[in-house]
Amino acid sequence: MINATKIKSDFPLFKRLINGKSIVYLDSTASSLKPQQVIEAINEYYTRYSVNIFRGVYDLSEEATVNYEEVRVKVAKFIGGKNENEIVFVRNATEAINLVMDSWGRQNIKSGDEMVATVMEHHANFVTWQQLAQLKNAKIKYLDINEDGYLKLDELASFVTKKTKLFAVTYVSNVLGTINPLKKIILTVKKINPEIVVVIDGAQAVPHMKVDVSDLGCDFFAFSGHKMLGPTGIGILWGRYELLDKMVPYQFGGEMIKEVTLKKTRFQSPPYKFEAGTPHIAGVIGLGAAIDYLEKLDLKEVREHEKELVSYALQELGKDKDIKIYGPKNPEDKGGIIAFTIRGVHPHDAAQILNNDNICIRSGHHCAMPLHIRLNLNASCRASFYVYNTKEDTDKLIEGILKAKEVFKK
Image (cartoon, rainbow, N blue to C red; front, side, top):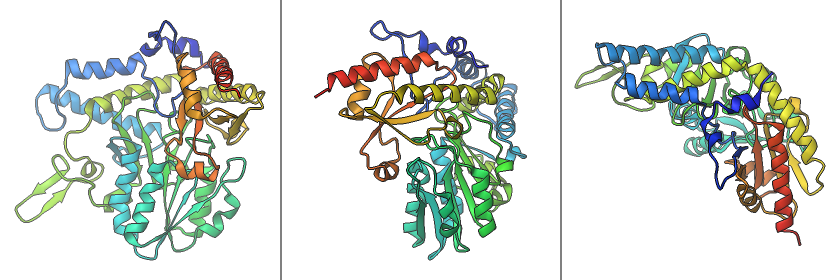
């Protein structure tokens, strides 16, 4: 069982007081905090072997290269990948999806082709394909949600056809918290069109539950290190090797080259042909430490802890008739994310009042404007939970909401 109070001691930020008050962090969906173990791994790289990888035959460079490549193997194992060469290091999930769009999409999407995304997508998995559709004169359709925040899967068969080249879907909505039944969805779309390519935004899934990309049957899977206790500036694209092998490089420069002459250039095999230039070595090292930390906790326990927190938060927030909660109400179908509005209080005002007591939530459209338009909202509040959160954090959130209501009461 997760002991969040004990875990909190691993996170230096919680030792900080602002205006004499401790911090209640409820914005892990935007970015998680970093444990001391991750910070120390990054610091060790910079203090003991902060040299470039691949390019040196001296001991320090070889040490850096070995440690860097060990993380690639670790990431593959962590997400159920069968081949570490299917792991491409990028800056974040957004760059991972853009890499697929640029290297696969530009080659394979033609005029008149169809793509399908969903209305609940983060902009990274929405705008990217919208722009490709415009560029290629292709058609893009968006699968809707029902009033409870679930995708209308009964309509999926009418959206996907033999002409559908790509299906883009999030594993967990970064607003509604909806956990989509991906294996069922992928089986459905692949049955309709076995050639369809499925791109998964897994940024809100990998940090919180056990993911197995091989079992899911998807083609590309993107996620970010900074949402899973790792550093910013490091993300991962997993892709089926046979697809990666056929794709053209995303960027050009050093290290991704096999041979260069005045007449032509030959590129390395995946994943290296997609990793031009000096990578974020410290970020990869930190990501490896974050995976070690999460595996020690056990992701099954992490998931159970979040379900318990969400269940309690739904129960307590649901007692206030001025609070409207969006998305599934069943914790089994919901990640550690609760989006809500407060009658008579703008989300930005609510977030500001909560900030007075160092309660950190997110307000706005959360990079999901089409979803907010669908919900007839300009903005919402979002509280998100992780391994260091407790039920007491929810109690403080509710106290802060009551203060906001008092300030803005009519």
